[in-house]
Amino acid sequence: MSWTTKPSATQKIPTRTEPYLTAAMKDRYERELIPRYATRHGALMPILHDIQHEHRHIPYQAMLEIAAFLKITPAEVLDTATFYEEYSVHERGTCVIGICQSIACEVCDHKKLVDHVRGKLGIEPHETTDDGKFTLLTLECLGSCDTAPVALFNETLHEKLTVEKLDQLIEEAKHSSGEHH
Image 1 (tube, rainbow, N blue to C red):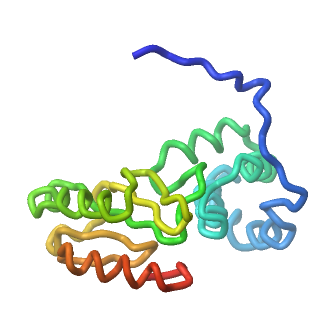
Image 2: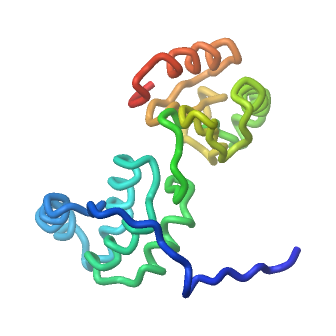
């Protein structure tokens, strides 16, 4: 493996005219979020979650806006956004399928579920279908080991999953608006 360098200093960041961090959001964060933490930096993860929830990813422009708002460096925002699996800098599908791969789910054959979704949707873990409808993730422990195997469909946990139940959830998601499954 070789290290590949990127021209970070000269890289163009896609921008839009409308800010991701609106005045209303900043006001709400100042009133409700910032006071909860010893430093402004403490509010970074909840703000990233808000942006991701709204836009299905964390755009680079949003990271710059968050950094300026929290008075931290853009690198600190990028480091956090790329470290945690919860966040993505690439747009995810309207339905995110997160299959647990912890030891309990592994013992209960989570791989069969992952392989089924791979075949059915034609994507690998951490990819999104061409139509933007589905993203497949493999996640670490979802905290429901006694009901393994489990998966999240967006933010809804589904327990004791079978291939048949997975197919049913995918079909429901195909015909829904994509918000919650």
